[in-house]
Image (cartoon, rainbow, N blue to C red; front, side, top):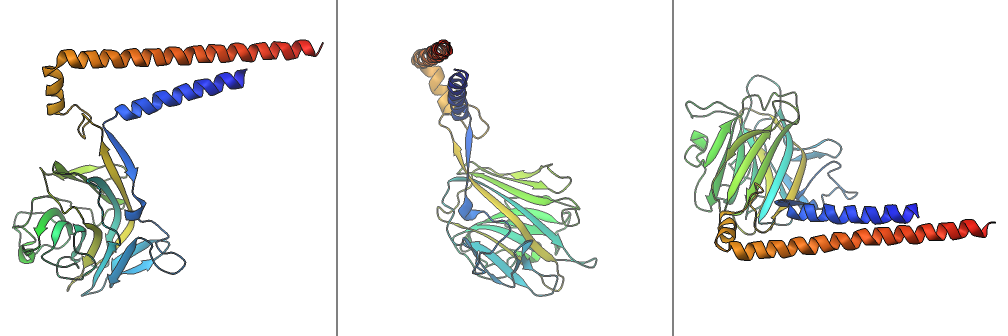
Length: 319
């Protein structure tokens, strides 16, 4: 009897949890095809979902090193499949480190139509089409800006990156991140994109599990087919640029809500304009939910009664 009763209660709890999850604003679905973690290579010494080239080297149990602490290096890592999700989140753990007091040049995260080509923009091709987020560790000519500096640029396949001025004319948003290179804590960057709504970039380097907002843009239009990539470069100065892990997920916004979990203005306005209709639908839904609970309740009672009756019958049969 008790096992049947517990099973019914667990089923009821599961239904309620599913309903509450559906009422939430955003659902997250991991994308294995665009994630990466140790060991980075399979038995054939290849990566199933990523290609790499240039000066990139991989230590399967620790990192993907885009450049070593040597001069004049360029390395890249790009997904084999395009990222077709309309809303997504990418979290990258990385480490920039090296010897000496001077270091450079930096690394980049890409969502572009092009893939796997070395070039002058942090180790990848210029005149790209799509999004580039740059972690620039060496200051060229940009007065009044503290480095390292994190910035975003959207390319249209014709605009050239302003390397001499650290992308000042290309920047759509950015922030200073002093200490991100020398931090003793895990260093991470998180990109959250909602199609034609916003791009938000957060950083973790001040302390473990403490995220700091770098910037949030307005609406951005990115290519519908774009590859996720990473690249880095060194010049006269150098650094190790390591990728430790990549976690990518698809974001689904439930109908009637935005990414903050509140009703969208249009949907809220519809409810105000058609108040009677909305109240009727809400009342109908409430009654359906009430009757569902009643049915489940009586199911639990009947199940308990049947179990108890069988238990008593078995007890009498023993005497």
